[in-house]
Image (tube, rainbow, N blue to C red):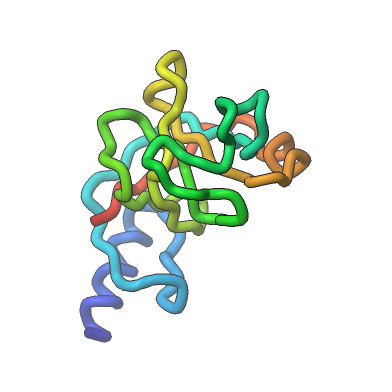
Amino acid sequence: MTELIAIISAIITLMGLPAIPIDQSPVYRIKEVIYAQVTAYNTVEGQTDTTPCISASGNFICGRNDAVACPTWIPFYDRVYIRNRILQCLDRTAEKYNGRFDISFDKDIQGAREWGIKWEQVALLY
């Protein structure tokens, strides 16, 4: 198992991605790496529908720090790696923004504003 972790870590380093912290998660494999627009949103009315804590997948996401709205071509519950974080696709971006990833900052409005709009490498995991 240690050898496998070392190999995955070496591949991630060669791809220019930061290493996935071993203590943060089980071992994931990279399915694909894409370059995409990544934004942030808050679980509040006005930025979502009238039920901001219920994601498109039906999950309660208020209070969570691992939820991300993903493009429609990525199945619900898949995991992605963005900027040293493993996030789970629990929500969908609005159709006009399909193709971007939108990280939930829960009620941290200032944090979402500071994130802004970025182009990032996104590793699709399995």
